[in-house]
Structures are given as C-alpha cells and as structure tokens.
Length: 65
Image (cartoon, rainbow, N blue to C red; front, side, top):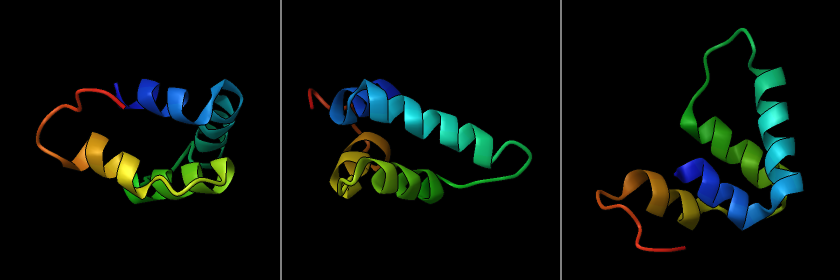
C-alpha cells in the first residue's frame, strides 16, 4: 500500500524512476528504509518526510492521502 500511495503522490514517471534506480543501485547490497526515503526525495524533488511518517511509522493505516 505504501508503494502505491507513493506512486500516486509522485506520479508514474517519477515512481518508476525511483524503483529502477533503487533496484540498480542496491542489487547486491543491504539497504535501509531511510536510504529509500532519501532516494525518493532526491528523484522526486519533494519533501516526503511527513508522507513516509504517516505510511510507515504511525501505528494505524492511513484513511486517505
């Protein structure tokens, strides 16, 4: 659900750019959620701290975004 919400937030082009870059850069390594957030912010040009806080770190599922 979080990835679909991110796709809706940043748009298809940017979302798939994030996913391709993530896979290519981290193919053989271990990574963290903060690294994914940083890449998402870098490629989208958006501040996504609140978005990821709501979708990943709050105990309840968001009602809508």
